[in-house]
Length: 168
Length: 423
Image 1 (tube, each protein chain N blue to C red):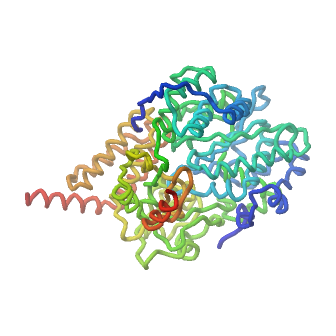
Image 2: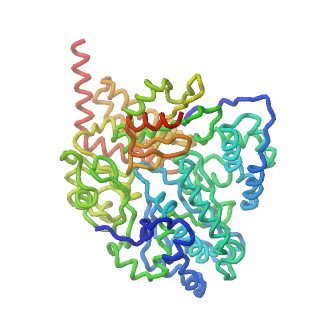
Image 3: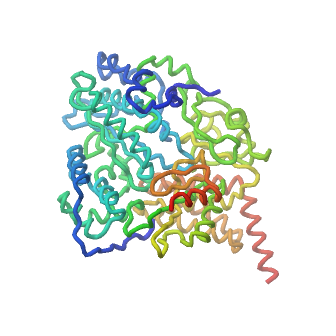
């Protein structure tokens, strides 16, 4: 359990773009209940905007025809939904079991010290955001780091340095 | 030691594409199964001895027979691809290297249970994996293996991928159903069991990716061919994930029943830097730890694990050597369960946080001997007092470390006593 109750308003109305609109319409036919679209619709919002604003949640609720509270409840329960803008590069370091045994802490310490961003925060210039996350399912190639959804396995501080150099 | 039953196509380049998969036998069982009655398919799966590969090991074919007969409601299949148990990384290989094996398995299962809609619940973190899986499903639709008429037979089937969003609890089958219904992943009280009242209040079967992907081999080659692998009660093969402090960690397909230490040496290359074995977590973080001494007589099957007071679990084996600090490891694990508690039941929501604070206090050299007993008491008071077994997974494993490696906790506490005495 973590506190993820804060909602951020952009002051701008939200709408799906044409591609997400079509995907929403394709998917909603697959479920006998419209509320099943809450998780997929929030993913579509996040794919489009990078995060989920208060307006986007209201839009999803309207589009599905359900209560905004139900969308809010889901968006705040599932930790992968970003309720604030993230950095250009969102770095997740697995902290659990095999990654812990194989030295994830060195990577975490490197990020805090050299990238100047703490777990759960976005760096002031918006380049990096950083999260320590629970098991990412890559235990056989630990430690693992995920950046903007891509997995990087058997990571070391050196490999992370090289990788970040190519990303900027 | 390694075998290629489930993983037969894993090393073939581009086997995730329909063209290559078909060249190597994908969808070849469909003619055979559609010539049978659904009940005959179920019977073969029962005979094969296939057990649920998600962790519980419940017989797969038997589970299907719990569906009500002659129901007028829709029947659903939910494929559990949440794979969030620490140390578990097997299903991901199927999703990426042979997704058509999973789709063929889904067709077989849905025909047997008379379902026309399957949902694959995949953990949100598997971003690249979900793309490969979705591409395979799209190809299967385009080629007529899914949709109105599966492979030209009078059988309609839709397969939909439903992405989770970072909640371990959604691997629990009723939390998974809640999540598909668009809710928080909070487990349901049972009964009613999902086979009677599952998704949208309808009869539902929930099977793990690996269980479903075992079906094409069984239907193609027969129950006896599958039972030729493994032991009498633990039939077949398993995708083992070996991680931790070994030379060659990775995913290996092995028959059930091999001695765990032989596998550690001969498959995983033995311990790193010629260190000494301290213990083995046999089947994911939730399974009680085995000491090096206990491991000497353990074989990789459900019965041997149970006889040694632990569980086969997901087959995610973690090797611990003599450099591992058990107290820190336990802190890491309780942190996981506390973070992943859905918050529904008080003993879990509050109790795991309390346990975490005590272990952190011990690590900070502020613990007392009474804290060890308090931890054990908390384990007893949390366990089986909640809707699901998330907290029990934490307490059963924690208790095993406290009992088997108590001296490591005591060493921290003795150090704190001497520290405070000199202050």
